[in-house]
Length: 273
Image (tube, rainbow, N blue to C red; front, side):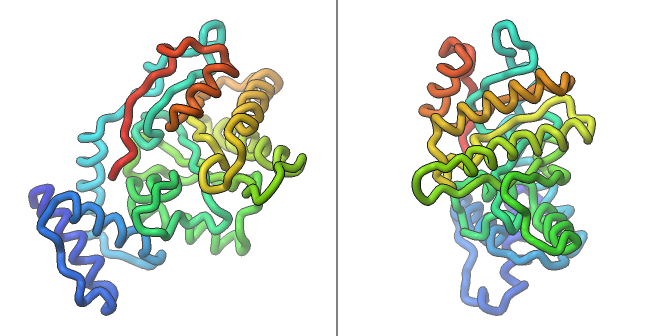
């Protein structure tokens, strides 16, 4: 199959799973097809799927991954005077590192809102259906939702990283409390601990809780830098930490906190399917 034929095959297979989709026709435009495919993946409940589907899906997603471009985390410049810290602006799903951090919700099954712009949606969409299936099995065995401040590790499947660390950050409804700050710090410590336990030599953190969970960006960045720096100092862990930012505002905040010249942190990467 050509790449376009793979896309249509995947759409047809997913449409055929649910009789409610019987009236949906496959659009002719490539981007509309991609949006439909991603939407169907987003809303699909964790249930068995054929090996043939997964084989075609993996080939499709890996082609899309390579077309977007992969960023070698090891080639990113470290901060002056600190070889363990990196600041990089770009799409975290394009990073080739041992582990990337996903800002998850307590269900740990990914975002079910079609085409939503949160990192949880992007990570699951680009990793593939296997990720939700793996997470569902993991959470079924656990028997309860994931507590705030903790983390789980999964394979990254079709992403260029080896692992995904899923952590549940605090949701802010009003003024930020001391408990919220402690919970966010716990997210960073939990991910670092898991990464070290799984022999990861590099980890990329997104800006946990600052998007849909509304943690103030400046305060969240302060907690992130302080917690990571303390962990590296006290644990003497041999791991390289990338502070990954996507928004320009977050970039400016981290540049100020880390005393990084503007040109040293620039990256590329558009978060689009």
